[in-house]
Length: 245
Length: 154
Length: 49
Picture 1 (tube, chains in turn red, green, blue):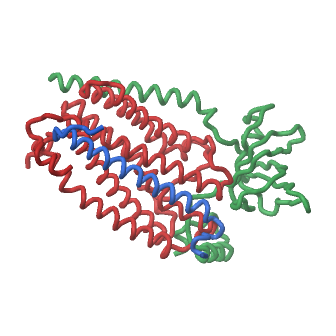
Picture 2: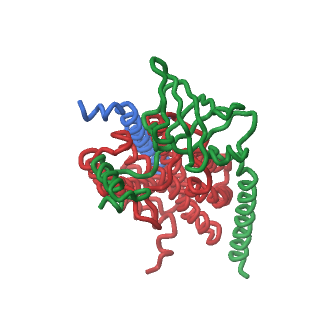
Picture 3: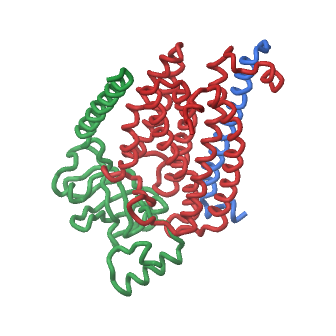
């Protein structure tokens, strides 16, 4: 299979349009199932009572906020080394999604911290580095808008995204490297999860929902970006677009 | 070397240099990134002298004393090696419990007591239903094992 | 009612979930507007603004 076939915006535009609804449906189904497990099946927690149920959005959004940046770094590396337009467009399409996920992680964390720790916010290493991530997302979006030439903006943003990637391991390992108010990870690749099975199931299904939602939103956004940047290109079926709008 | 490869090499070098720089900066700021000091660090005078800081550890079992008809409390923060008595006037968070984690902001008095202005609860990363926790506690008392984990409950 | 109360943590749980739902709604609606504007511009239809 020739992957380069999909490397041009013209070829990817219809592909993204075809797959988007399926990811949107998958996201909706996972959200319903995940919330059902999280609020009906999963029991109350022995030390936090019902307040722990915020975990079902807090952890998936926090994971997504870090993972999206890594995916953006992947596309940026591709954009810089192969000089492909679509890769940079993918990174550009993911940035707002990452900012939203970071915002949700911080917000739900604050409203989880208040009833459990006793404070909405503390300047510990985990929370501070996650806040820096939010500003890095803002920085990428701002840099993009600050440069008129899209190709130059692609390169500048790609470099910023690659440099900003050093923040991701700092966020992830902050709870091990420093004394923090935030507790350690309940789920990791190296140890058995420290959560009851149904709680874990709810959290993982909600994480899948966050994945599918992010993919669906990014596909729509990359279509918008392709149209914005390829305006007047020969492949765009203007009469067809006019009929649909 | 193709231009594409050279560009990639430069990017790699740039990222590596920045990574090293960040590690060095973080090392330098390590002392400022410490959210709290343990009672052992306080005993070794590693905690800041003469200015407020946070102390973290476990609330020693049986150490909590509430002054009747007030919100004044006294308890002992321990890391099982050293102990620091804490005096606090205010409401405690819901998760504040003897034998559980705590982080208190305040300052150390010459008599060795810590006068807290804010007390936060620090909980662990274990999530389970109360019945499982009770069963684990029973098993722990039965076998007098140290620090139970979820696996022991199964 | 007992469900909404969330063991006295209702305010925190529902504020967290509510703002998340709001954030998703804002993202989806603004994205739909952006795609429509881009399609309108690319199709050559005169911008009515």
